[in-house]
Image (cartoon, rainbow, N blue to C red; front, top):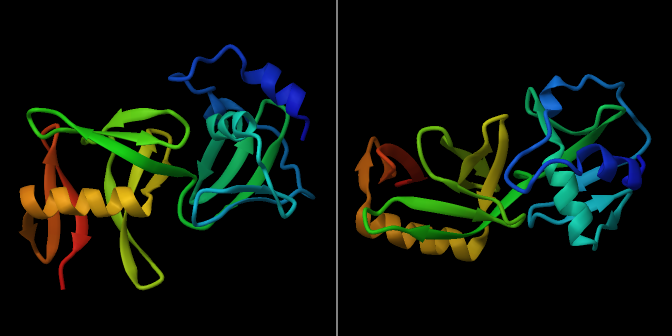
Length: 180
């Protein structure tokens, strides 16, 4: 995996436009280990990647193939082991109509709506809301402080249906958590 080549391959894409990784079909490149831990930290061969620009660059060329994540360029495809989800949702805004815009750790924001579905994933005996961040099956999870703030909003503004707490955002019913 060559960082300079990767940068060149995707330099023409703005922050809000992602490269067409789903149309690229390179050979699988094995031998490196990429890992995203439960806190959203990225690792390469066991070492934390501290350069935020490189991590943001990697986040733009992620692909989800049947629940398995890969970094994909026109030349190579590298497996990425992901504990929860690759994106971390670290903040959100609520407009006057109580619609929600989520913000990620990679300075990417999106509306919480029917195009960004949410499902509850059990992780260590807790049901976490997992959000479809990008339409190509790239997911994100709410960090702890954002999750608690989000639950506070949902508790005040939401409704319960079949033991699931929901909120409305941009005319979509969004599941937030399981009620016991």
